Picture 1 (cartoon, protein in one colour):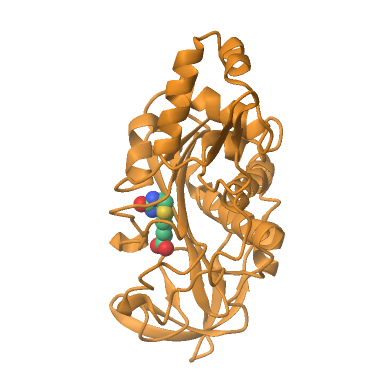
Picture 2 (cartoon, protein in one colour):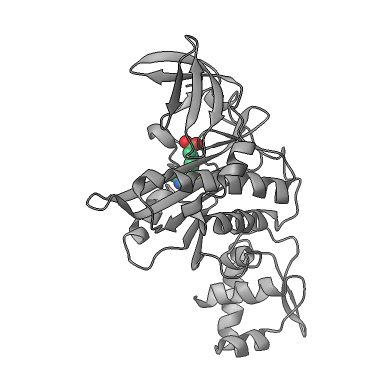
Length: 328
Ligand code: BTN
């Protein structure tokens, strides 16, 4: 950690109460002058730090800037997380994570961005990632699983998102197979898991779990093409300043629990319970043809069992299905 991060950590731990520059300097074994300079930099970056002579510095309870320290505060003890990098704006957190993922000891690095300029979605699509309204994050994983189990990373993430949305934002969300999170038939979050495969052993070298969540309505609204299919979880900033940090931490806490049991897929019971599509009519493409079918069940292996109009059944294991013939 550099001085800036250390100072944020100290202020974050005592949010709302003052701590003197001298005490911070002593703790970090640096000069008072360097603490003063660091506080100045943080203030210029938008941190709300109150300075009172004879009392010192306090991070305001209204400060809503996400930092590694503000997220760590809410993380369970001993999660997979080994480092959190918070970035204001980046092209894609998944792409950024790839540079670290090739290194041996990188499992547990979490990258959180407040804006993406080239956010990626599945099937080569883009993911709209404007600033100040969403959370965009990527977690580097090195699971010891066969490639055919890799979908479990995505399904664990889906359950974690739904549970964290309920716990922190108090909204009921559902999972649209396989990787989308919906509220009231509109998408509020998406998951993109990218992996590097060891061909010899059919195991994963690494996986990058990317999650994007629309927390509040973007300032400029959603672009026209997304207006009818995307939504935000909250209408506006109807939450306390710390909520985003708590939300990120809760997603990780949930994920960590199920990820530890990935080989047994204990999360699938909840995934099935929270599945939006069961009993619904859907559309999917097979060899260029659009097929209409009814969803019978989501299987324990995260397949989608459907019944076509000719009454034959088919299990879908990849690809994408749509509730609406036109939004595919
Ligand atoms: C989808 O809806 O198709 C998946 C969207 C995944 C978006 C997240 S945001 C963080 C991470 N970085 C990216 O570029 N994409 C994922």
